Length: 388
Image 1 (spheres, rainbow, N blue to C red):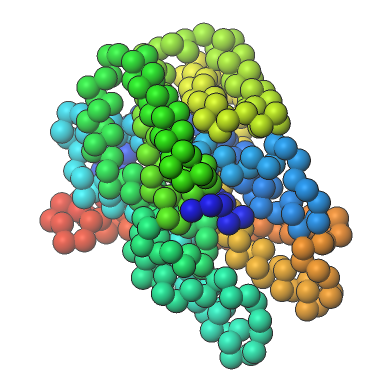
Image 2: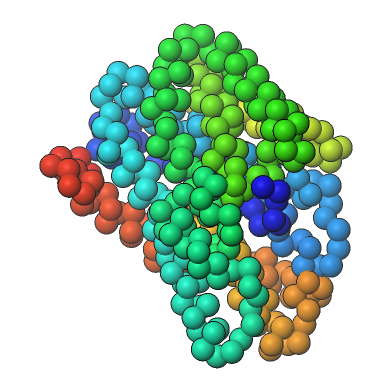
């Protein structure tokens, strides 16, 4: 399905809390730089979506802001491998506990935002307010609740469109044992793993484009679950490369991170194929992880880490906040939401962060802790594992 204009990033395990959160005893290294990276990716996506409210064409870099999703998908494969690959490879990981831990990361905010939108739609109907017909797609509600809306089961879309990406993430979580099986067998051949993953990225992008006439990087509701596959596999392979010790030197890691970031800007500015930018994300992630393993303190301040931690809530609330803000300025200030003055647009952008912070502290964190505390339902060891 072609891009509808709403994009988001996937819900990623928090690299700042890299210890296994489902009761396993291993505590992988804390990679704070990757937490900060999440915030930059989120801002890229939000900028992609919010810029048109100025009534101006997007700059070339923001025009490619939908690739922030690919960045998060690659990062997801990397972090899940970092936290869980060895446990899965050695058959020491409980699959139900793994899924429950992943669900605890993504589901509370999703269901809270979805419930809020349902209430908003009902209130609008009672008050006779017209807030558009692209949100309340009641036929798609079951798929939204079950996180299957990106599996081709919800052609109507609607509601909080960014949630398609966590539906894709849920697909990757469900199939993670397959990714882990392949990665574990290639753990001593990381360069081969990266080569095969890159071939999958390029091949799948080209095949999908040839068959549909559209870019896979613009797929959401219909093919979102497919969109994550090559990126997630690439993230797993990049983890193997980093794990092999390629990025041993601090100065080299910092230089590679800077070069990769510059390359991303250049590739997007000059309209390079999306697979080229996606490939560069791997170098960026691996070099930032190298910085972390070499003791670099760049991007490790409490501010950067905190902004990375609230990034999931940021892109989960950015569309509902846009909807509410547009209605307020239209009815209260008689402004056209599609042609906002600069001051109003800055309020739109800045206002998304405190809304995200509220969602993070009032919903995401407490609900995740509750789910971890009580463990996997109907599992004898669920509560003990969650409390370990």
